[in-house]
Length: 370
Image 1: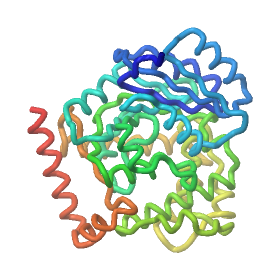
Image 2: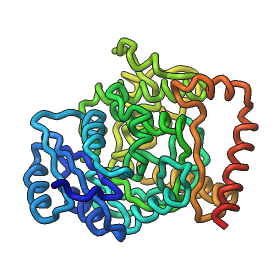
Image 3: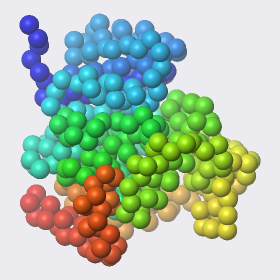
């Protein structure tokens, strides 16, 4: 006889997640919300994570462990473990991160209160490899360009039916499969974000991007930035996914993205040489900012971290003035790929009109909560 279906399935792919795996698991098992199963996929780990997961599964019946004999990679392992979920609500967890104790209850409450909402994200703190908080929740992310979701895989919760309708994770979007999924889900459902930290994202050498083969990650992130450029122009990027992969130079922003992990883990990113060799440089702001960032990070990372913190503080102060509420905030992508009707409509709107409509939606949310 099958066990009763829980309200929530927490899903977590794992590949070589020691020494942070125990903390990630404990943060889920210690949730104030209790009606969940914990589906964990070991993606052919080689660092002892497999044995540690077997120990955890033997101690707690809520854990359902799946094991792969060959490494699937981040996108396919995310899809595999998500499809194994039995509950109508699915919460994602990353194996080197930490969920705050009320994370699940906070997100489930949003779904319970808003039947039209199919996805709930949350803001997050950033911690380093020694579990020190190095950046707090960043409310400005709720108002950043709408081609960039304000959260990724870690603090993601969704209704399973929305995931199925969106088509799940796509292999072609490896290393940014979470943002691609969220963009596509925004085309078919309303998305809300808990505007406070419910999660901790870790910046460390265990990070999938940091630990994976460099050229492969560079190409993947270059595709991500090209897709974002398409979205900012209200265009679909689906045709880019199956186009021949170029071996030529990549977007300069790739090296800021890759170097940020080392920077916030307290290291000294050495990206300038690689940027000069592989970056698609030109006489433009992207190239200049990447060159300044890479040079600064390599010479004096401590002062760069301080400077970035000041910029983030300013952005957060402005964001809290725009939306001084603790209630969930609506978020929508500019133009989800594949939604031709929505794309056509949004092409006729100016950026100012989009911001006005978003502000009106947030005001309505506050009135409903009040």
